[in-house]
Amino acid sequence: MTENYAKAHQLHPDLKNSATLSYILGVLRGDGYVYHDKKGHYSVTLNVKSLKFAKSFRRSLVKIGLKPIKIFSDGRGYYWVRAQSKEFYNWYRSLGPSASRELIDAIKGNEIDFIRGFYEAEGGISYADYGYKLRISNTDYDIVEAISKHLTSINILNYLKRYKNKNGCIYYQLGIYRDCKRFLGLVNPCFKYIIDNRIVK
Image 1 (cartoon, one colour):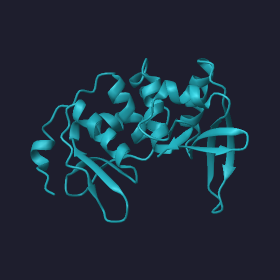
Image 2 (spheres, rainbow, N blue to C red):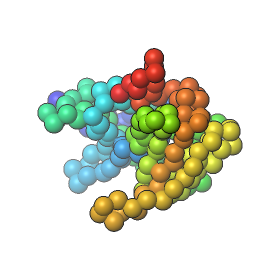
Image 3 (cartoon, rainbow, N blue to C red):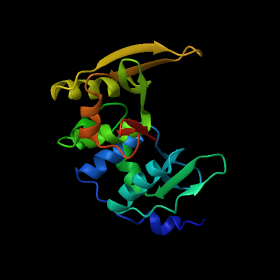
Image 4 (cartoon, rainbow, N blue to C red):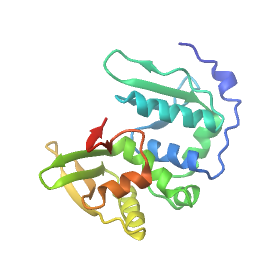
């Protein structure tokens, strides 16, 4: 597993507004992260338990012109995706934190793709006696609220609640019941969906 950092940092990824870039941003606002270390590496990274998710994110990085290393497993059930790009790092940092105006502009017209990435990273689906329940949870209220508002604007019924976990950490959960299947049909995630009345993980 080797990486040529110098060549990777010379890449010029396509950072124009697009469905692919919006999906990448959704993932990064969820489980992914972008960072700069003391060795001069500018990394775009995702480590997740779903190989489907890892492959989907890697394909998207390739599509915008990055050259991620091959997906590798850490031996503990997690799959890693990593690409190097100083240009992407600087651009991503320029978007600011949370649901900034810069982020909203960057995904304009491709909000569903952003939601797809965020759902794959932070969402889940379960079944109870009353039917399927879909949820998206995160500690960033502004991001979850922005998603809730967009779904409401396209008539997908949802609710937003505040919770506290056993460690005292506050998080916010967006829930969908009645429109669960409609949401999945619209967002089309690479996993966490329903087929033949069963949840696909």
